[in-house]
Amino acid sequence: MEAMIPAPRTSAFVCPIEWGFAARAIAGETESGDLHFVATHAGGVLIAVIDGLGHGSEAALASRLAAATLAEHLGESVTALMAHCHATLQRTRGAVLSLACIEPDGRGMTWLGVGNVDATLHRAGSARQQRESLHHRGGVVGYQLPPLRAATLALAPGDTLVFATDGIASTFNSVSPVGWHPQDAADHILRLYGKDTDDALVVVARTVGD
Image (tube, rainbow, N blue to C red; front, top):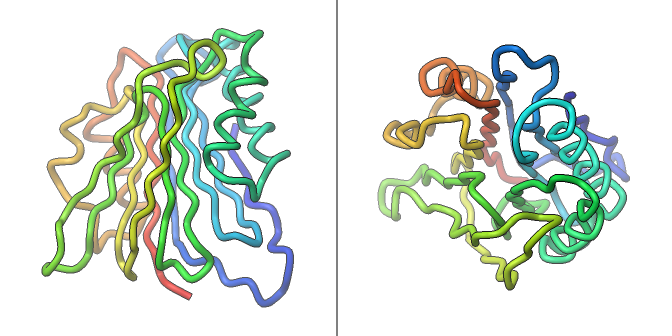
């Protein structure tokens, strides 16, 4: 299932990112439990990567319900969105989930994660710290939600955000995607670092400013 970007609410809205994704289900399954959601709204752009626990149709159902919940509450804070997803998924097997909301001018981002969906920000400027990782907290959305503490970071044009489920080997972060087209970077990461033992999904988003 591909997540769609709803139309901007005003014709003056300019999306502050370019992005791409690559995904595949584990061999033998027709549905993946890994799902992305990217949507524009008046407060910027929301990016989410959801990993329903396990594999197959039940994992996919949990991820789709989380994506529908994000769409329903689009524009709320990332902590509120996480809480809404937790309430929705309590009758499912649950999911792990990381969220980032990028401001309309592309100069700031607030992010939050529960579980092991990796999120890393690669800085484009050589004078700054080159890489920052999301400090996601242990738990399962729909089963056990930890105290939620979102973090806010400044952004600059060219900074590149990568989300990856645990079907992507953690060594993918050894090479910076800065300077790549986001779709090329996502395809490359899945091809080289995707595991055969799990569903896999990667989203790459590059800030372009306002």
